[in-house]
Length: 315
Image (tube, rainbow, N blue to C red; front, side, top):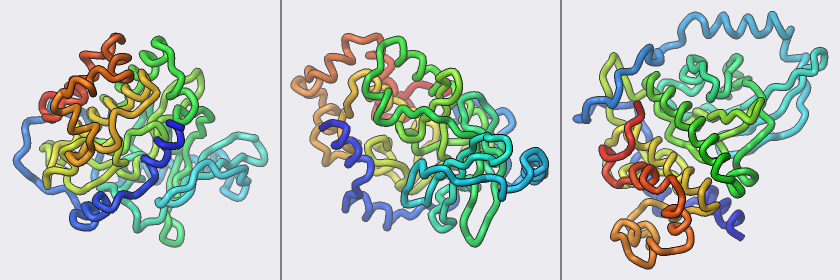
């Protein structure tokens, strides 16, 4: 029952959330008064495609002949953005994932393809190459067969929780070191590659929060509501890194309790508002008791601090 409930929470549009999205459509980053960055990013992403992106595409075709050699195997996922398919090379029998995203649904700035193509880390899904085709963005990336969503995230042991959460934080720290915020960290966007290595995928909601060496504020109601930080709903402009850290806190709660703390970090949500008031019945519930008995109690409370500046630093 919980799995079905969580799935509905992640997919069901709420009228008030949709109204917020309509009133505050994502737009290019703007400068605003924000605190100094937690860390000074080394080699932030560029706002225009560097030449190596094109060369990478050519190298891919040189090494793997052409797209005609890839046959579709099955659909891996479908969403409002488009579709992700598994493809296999007819000659080498290699696998790769192909994402076809409708251009009008892009929430990235710079574009998802520009951001993802410049990310190289063991905990980030590798993007082989990308191209625009008939108005759609086509991204070809490494295929990772495992997934946390619906499988491991609901049955993790203490050792597994530590392993996966440490890997998640490594990936998030790397993103922030490149001046990038993901903005949609959730189980569906965490997949498992070789040697059970966690990798972050889907950068359709990501954006650069460091422009010309200066941190800028973000705006827009972007993400998946159960994993979105409260400031996204409450203020016009907000900092980038704390938004990801909040999502990591919700994911950690998932891993430890196999449940969600609340549906949405919005004052109208009874569970969330009760937690803010530290209601005794809420804090003593079965799921929160699991947290208090685990080694994650202090860390989780820091990640889920309502004030963004109090969340765990990303550096």
